Length: 254
Image (tube, rainbow, N blue to C red; front, side, top):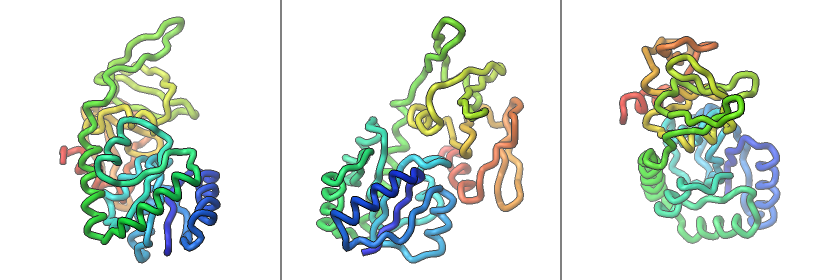
């Protein structure tokens, strides 16, 4: 049995490989991938594995972008560090997941479940589609306000006032439509779990953009696009070739 690991944390990938060698030595790990782009390219150029272990939150965005860019017909066991509302979608749709830090008992349970189900490609694709549809409807759980520090106070920051969020010198900043900037304590991955993904898009590793802030788009080399906002940004906001399709669907509300 051949398996693929998609995980951007080196230590987490090593631990998973070690535990697999102990609880399921018959599983051969083909390779470990770390990004969305790398994973999309791999699926486009290789035969599908028997099983995929996939971290939900990768350095360049949500791993669900992989499913938007390329067809994944093999069974997937998701891993996540977030024990939040989104996990209900996995339970409802019978897709198994492992909560980090992974332990051998849960890993063996997930593998035993995979073997018992013996999914064919059509069944697995149906499950994944149901999962994605369920996750797209989670906007009702999104935050309306963040409490942000301002001198000696905490002030409510309305999400509707945010034009974009970006990483500046390892600090996460929210830029409002009026040009004000506020520091946020969360990572971009954590913020994407809390924002309504109908109105906010993770453009790349550095930027989250608001739908309302987008003025127009520019074609960029390598079949990429750049997002132009209604207010200035420190640098170009580039969407990679493999995620252009996902962005267009998001922007048009599909």
